[in-house]
Image 1 (tube, rainbow, N blue to C red):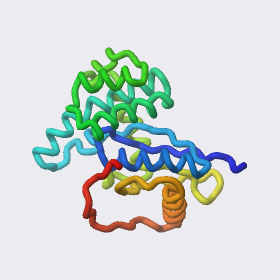
Image 2: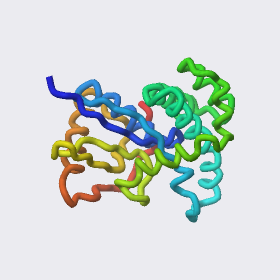
Image 3: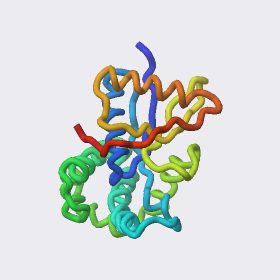
Image 4: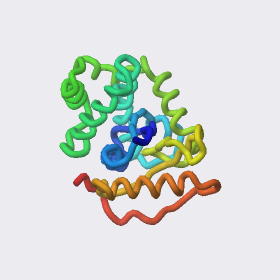
Length: 208
């Protein structure tokens, strides 16, 4: 049996494209020897000081809460719980279209057996140093001109890690189709000097 590869995906819970990629990676785990760890980056941190639209800026204000809760849970309960919390948050945010706020956060925490009172961390800076450190760890290998998802995976040379933004997909491939996409992504990401493969998005996020 092949040794399983450790893969990190850096996410912001508010991003629908990262959510779809995360569901694809869960499919990849089923068909390839891969174990995914979900780690926190922050679109609010990434866009600090940038010239963005007023509408986007308002959205970024609400984006602080979920990442603060996720990093606090990682620090106090371990990364394995973050995986479950991300699913609970994403299910409510992206599938349920629930309004981001204390009610959603408390419900998501309860979904995974955590103290709903942790929702208060959404408005606290207590874990912001750890949040920024996690964000920087995710973004440093790929640069600051991308967002989420960012994936760190084993490269073609033993001991080497490759990092990349994406893939941005909709809907998430299932079964062997998910595995084939993973194979292709690793192939191009592990090619020295490869930087970009892109086309215009013509579809909205689909959560099917």
